[in-house]
Image 1: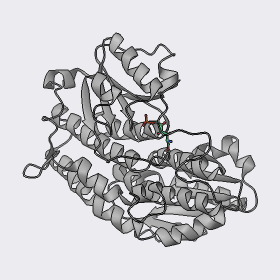
Image 2 (image 1 turned 90 degrees about the vertical axis):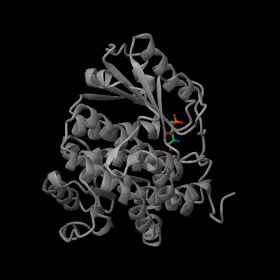
Image 3 (image 1 turned 120 degrees about the vertical axis):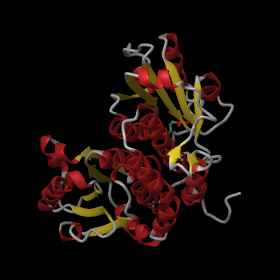
Image 4 (image 1 turned 30 degrees about the vertical axis):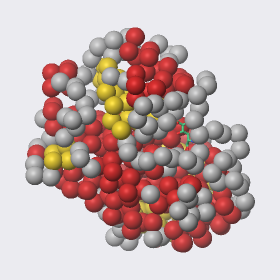
Length: 367
Ligand code: M6R
């Protein structure tokens, strides 16, 4: 059932192009170049226009998808978005009104805290839209609206294809809201749709770099500490890369917003410490490069993640991995893939049980 792969995690990483196709399929009107979710979601035009804020609530990797969701939805719709981990949200007495749309994200649809947050939101009169992978799960049954991710069953404890298909579901939903609220020109929406359609083939191309990433991972596997840095969406992806690495390789790692390093964490950057620096966002690219120069000045060993065609970054880092070019909002769907592979190969090099890391369960159904 591992289809010839050594581990479910690797199989699931390689299933991402297919998962992308499934998540996109039947949700795009190819004639009009628009997103069509009307078969699945019954939110009226009046309701969508009345939403004054969105709360995204989830745990772990799904929470990291939510962090990307905040950037995406705010950029596409200008609706303010807050993101919380479910175990915090449910106890912090959040301000929920009937005009708050609460989005819960859960691969399994059975995570106890996420389910409790969903119920708390409904008690406060909000509608809940669930992004989940499991049809028939508790979350899918109790939510007012459900957007399935169609990633297929995910067995490895470390979530990979569930995360990337959650991102695609978020892109589609964000575009849908934007269409209804008319916050973008048709041509802009069409551009996003075109770029989303290219993601599966781009992910396939990226997976061809696995042998190179394996070499980096084997080098990093000898270290006990590692840092991920990035800004804006690259920071959100850094958090996911760091979680993945911790969870299966047991290497201590931290993800930091690159501009925040000087406020404390830079003290930890010493000779030879590995730093993975994501630099895929055009608007803050120069700022990111200056942060990279700061860690290089402390003799860090820097692996940069850049967009294809970037010839600049190589001048300030030790090694570069490039991802295919896409729109800035969509880069997380690609930049996370090398980070998943890094975590996988680092765990493998350390002889860990990749699919069943210590102390963790696939589905967290208790608080
Ligand atoms: O099933 P869920 O998406 O609700 O699960 C949430 C987290 O438990 C899960 O993403 C966890 O963080 C993964 N092990 C991360 O790889």
